[in-house]
Image (cartoon, rainbow, N blue to C red; front, side, top):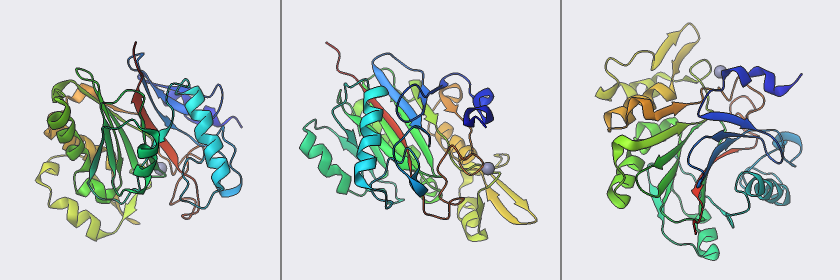
Length: 281
Ligand SMILES: [Zn+2]
């Protein structure tokens, strides 16, 4: 069966599938000076549990395969204009790291730093976060050359990491929040994201969720929460315009063309959310 059949009809602007060469990814339609997207599972070189487009060095895959996958992505999606990809050590917190350097050696060192969001105003720097059920966000400040990627698990969401990233984009780069575009990639959906009552209790303390429909559902098998609707409520309260919050709405757990930490019992690869803007001459 063709893996694309299951979701192509669900894809709509600004998201489209690019699987021409290298890792397949959901391309985000944006300015021609930007590269932005969410990778999927097919189109890479990794084998076994990590087949095939695993983008993480930290999950037990062979480094050589991850390097090949990343290189192939930089060639196709990055059009060879980004010398490297900048990632950090994700820790389920709410720390944002602002990248103001372009020296490749310094950028490589950032991989050791614990943070869950990356911001930059530097051309030629491609930022990435890695996920396999958590919600990845791409943020683009259209009135300024400023972008961010955010890794949002339930812990980060509970600590409002998305809002922290928005606040930093506004504070450091003078992005006008009402023009900020936010793109939410594939993540575990409320169909599958069962949590304990203690998790629900923590979110219940957030008054922002009062009156938000469907952020939590109680079914015979337990509680299920909807990362997307919680994230939307937080960002809209922070000033993001409703029409500027774009959701791909693909559940990683339901679709085997995505890596899913829960479905694959923790031994699996990671997909990458990436964004950067090109040097203009
Ligand atoms: Zn699902």
